[in-house]
Image (cartoon, rainbow, N blue to C red; front, side, top):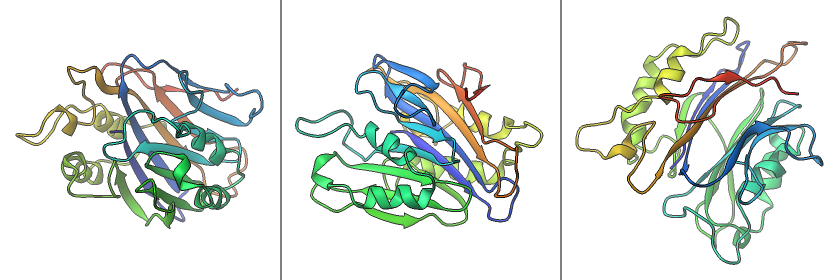
Length: 251
């Protein structure tokens, strides 16, 4: 159960801020974000070394895409394509609207269920494949803060969202201008959870099975017209409670 926190601020110098924790089996091999695909030189994304796709990335046009499993759909299934390829398909597009259109035209029986976010500095979309026999839906994300796990956006039935969304709302948002990301870094690294809730109610956790938080990322997209101001992509190549975030250089 991965987690995304998306802050939309139209009219702000940094209209989109995204924080993401990736939860996966610890023994599943992966490589930190880079330009790993020779046929996609404009894509900077983490690579799932097992299936070849990605869980999250950005492209040189300023599009960010991230995918999460729906509840109860962890792992591959016979006859289904890897959901990680969808991040790469989205990042082939020059804007979020184009990426959302591509996702809306998917054959739903080709993939296990998923949640997805595609966004740029103008638009942000929630893409949901809720059931394997249902069409893929695309909805605009509202302004302000949205949290997403394996259920619906801001779903209060998710213990993680119920506990941590108020904490994100209360925290100072990241400031890419000054390089201050400390508030959200601390939240992504938090092992706090509601009393009586299991470890998976925390933002960062590890279960006895070996499933847990394996990496974390922060992205900031600058507003239109800010020539020479690149997106910010920060990555912790391990659980963020003991792995520092580092800025990715891009090339």
